[in-house]
Length: 403
Image (cartoon, rainbow, N blue to C red; front, top):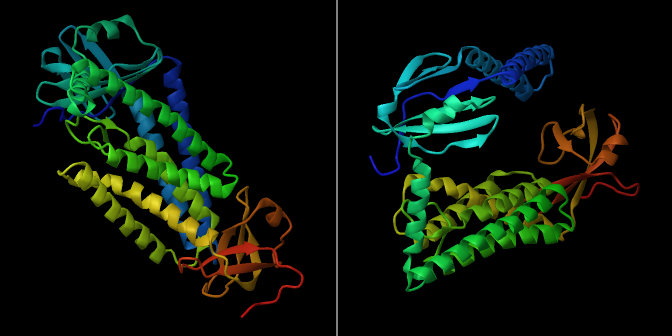
């Protein structure tokens, strides 16, 4: 077993105290109520002769999730306990009871939390781990029991710092390397503030849209380029025993918001070709950049590939509809149903390549003034990159179907 690797053989322990216990029980009962309501709505949907198949299966699936969650929370809350003795701790979970001897503990990973919550992973000498989650008031007995146990996280933080300060790319002398490495870490912290601001811009109010999309795409590209150019000091991916500052996290949120925002602005007629292209482009970029960064490669590194694919999806989608200046094909359609709630969804009839009814999201103003049986117009665009996309708009009085 390699250094830092652990195997989980104990379930997580939850300990609830005081009003927190009552709150968790109440939340479990709410989940059971939501499950009952979901099953009822699902039964109504199944009784409808023209009900949607997705909705028929979605309600039972969601209800089953709430039912299982509610039962687990209630059982865990009512049965969970943690007893501390001088030489051992005895744990009771929802389904089992076991004990951990103090002499078998190698150390704790971290003792984090507040006065009302503590998260405490315990690492045993044989590599197994036992995690304790305590909600409610902390006490002196609990703090005293773990007081003399070594904090392994503090040791790991020291090892990471030592590896970073020994990186010759930061300079010839130890004091120079330490000063430059800390400077890079500070720059990364400030960069997180910048990318967080761009992410909020894209989420809450992406106007003007071209500037917002360009900023999201550009900052991700800039991070990757700078990381490659300074790959002796910076790393995009988490690599075991690495001695570089990690900067890959800076691009995660902007790339995801870029993809979501770009794909939401223009609906593709057929998503298959677009998604395959974005996925393949992301895979090629990931493999090339990962190879430049470090020669070794593990299967777990593939978890970073979707982020590259998300960036390409956002850029390709935005370029496909924003730079599409061709004349669209206008197809009148009839509104056959209106959605309930606050999602402003209209169900339109078949049109062009769509052979059945389809739910579309429209602005609130258009939703409010469009009754069932009313007419809207689908603007079918060829797409700058060849992927057809469409938007639903109100019909102009002089508009006629285009051929």
